[in-house]
Length: 382
Image (cartoon, rainbow, N blue to C red; front, side, top):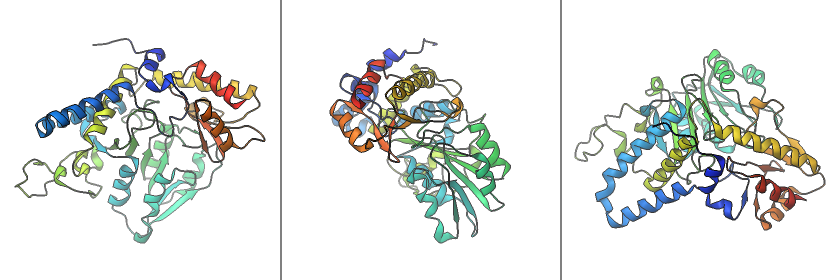
């Protein structure tokens, strides 16, 4: 059934945090949505009242959540694994890839540590990590191209920079990497839930994202995607009872791996976490987020543009991409002559939540952020 997408006001009513805080820190840890809270309470009630009897229902719900996540990015359900976090997804690729000594990985020096350490951990296998030095506001694709050579196997990069907010043009980076005969790993945690991504139109090879930022889920529940043709490329890491075809037959000890991405899930799942994430994904579908369109991104763009204007009016120095297609929900700024950590502390005292990254203040509003929230931010900073 086709329904009208929820408005930002409707969204706000589903965010309990809005009654207390002006919340500008979704790029760190989001407050979870009311639907996610209800899903967690329901699971707890069932776990207490039913125990193992409800387990079959929970597993069926996981399959629905996997399908919802797949639809959000234009993938097939069997290309999605439910994983605890982004780090798990990165390590599935970093540890499972068929490296040969002398291979290299190209990445950026200002990546979040999660998208550096798993690759750096391959050093004892003779793998080089090439970190491209860039300034904090831009990402030059030409420098990425120059760093790649015949031994480059993977380019690992964030869709949206956690510090600067720079957003990649996915078509451009996919084309560049594939022209270099390399695979693209996309850390999507700062973009998924905001911007549309259609895996078939922009065929990244691997993708991982945790649900506790823009997708409004709890920590410990995320997704990992790989193109179906890469399924046998990666050596499965963390194999367990839940990795095989006949997973519920515990007397049959045969390593017959599933022919889907779920082979990487290994053992028991974070049921309560994934049920909550699924409820938030359902909410985002109600808000109109699809693989090709996002009213959420449009609303966040309006809020960040207004925030830029209001911040500049009080003398803030703004750091953001000059071109709209590279802008995101993350905005960094400085108040000249003021310590950002002290300003953050003072903002918290007045009910305004924001972050410090790279010695700058960082705001990351969501689609339910109101002009009244912006008023509280500006008043707190002044």
